[in-house]
Image (cartoon, rainbow, N blue to C red):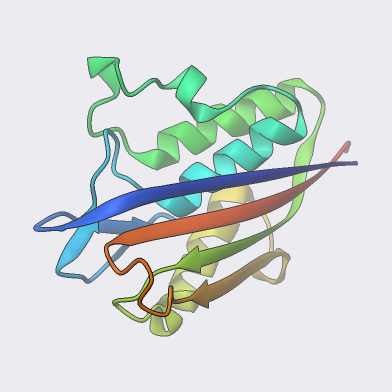
Length: 153
């Protein structure tokens, strides 16, 4: 078994889409990013890559490369999963924490959990999600931290 940790954060601005765990969340503000800015998928990808000592998503999809402008984070996740599989591992369980002041994410938990489970080919009870606010300390950002447990089939 292997375990990996990943983290990502983006500034929020009006007029941008807010994507979390592959789900578009209704919001007046979204992440400023080179890709779609899905901090959950970005943190998850880094956790997967970290578990197998394969670097991070910045090395695979650098934000300095115009080919990746507006890239769906699902594509990044698929690339990370392929690399993990190439090392002989599969995802067994993931857990994530999202910090965001507004909007409240509780009503979106089931949708995000189901989407992540589908992307990872896991049952939903192997995808843990916790939502927090910054208590006003950082209201203009969204952040995610993820842990991934991998096992050899």
